[in-house]
Image (cartoon, rainbow, N blue to C red; front, side, top):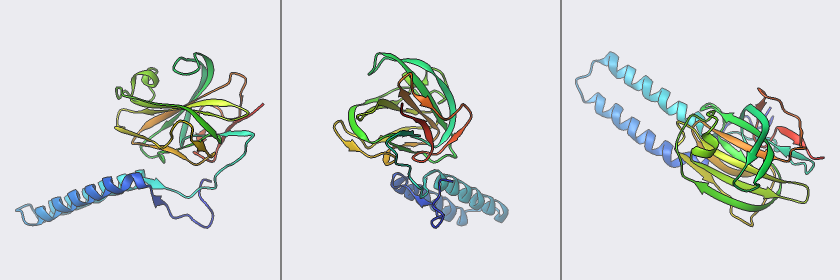
Length: 226
């Protein structure tokens, strides 16, 4: 499990504070205004229930559950929560310019959307790309959608993590800068609403997950280093 046994309460991520505050004020305003209108009492209750549902939906989206972070220099840890939807060889042309092993993790709107560093090391490269908002599982979303590219290197491995916005996602947050020293399983960034994370690894990487597996960012081992 991704929850600490003694801390099952889910916290709210800082990226949600402003959004949830504005949403709460908006929903309260709608419900207060409705009370002073000629709307029938039955429909007032419907408006209230819908408002509660909307707020709770976005509240769970920005949840930040306590996790037992995996820290092991011999392993690469999942950068995201979600379903492993792709494991294949693919040409990476932005940084490496060669074939790599690509593992893709799809984050539905119901997954935790915090992204985490797969390894400890130095940030060698970072770039933000504007783009479209195709569905996150679209084959060309990794090159056409809004995205960020982060390359992390240590003495054992150099890998690339790509945050990809989906059809609903409209903002990617990335906390890294070139030359930063980052720690494994600490926060790399956050993607607001459904999206995908790709990780490019050496072709001889020893993968321990398989397509269809459910991964937990900062917890699940996706493979070990040779």
